[in-house]
Length: 200
Image (spheres, rainbow, N blue to C red):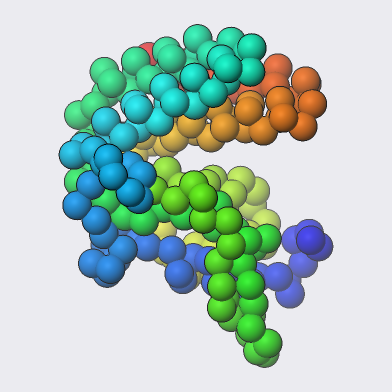
């Protein structure tokens, strides 16, 4: 996909319009956290800690060390009170980004379909992969926030984002291993260590 050309700003803006905001419509809400199907979790912290252990288990099943992910799960458990400030579950698509959207023919790009929903779950919108991608670089992708709006910038939300980043890095470690990207796998340990320093 072309890079940071201004012509892509409208397309990058659209995912922000269809993603649920923390104060979004009830349609996007559910009475539990975690997977879209049962069993769910009564608290966000339970869903996050469980997901970290599941990712760690997947990493270990590939013959890789996941002690850092287990340590992050322990830190998340210790900080459960901060995670549980997220009280309303919202729909997280897991991978809502430009490459996973279908566009209708229109002068302004209009999303008419969303692909790759296998990682959908209920939780904090800040934990979604989309938020990581949208804020990864100061380029045309920042148009996402034109339609989505701003994000929280307090101490608790910053701490939660470190936990979420470890989740993403754990998933990336798996993907890099699958692709044979040994340097990327190794780099994930450095990146997780940096996040852990902010959690413990």
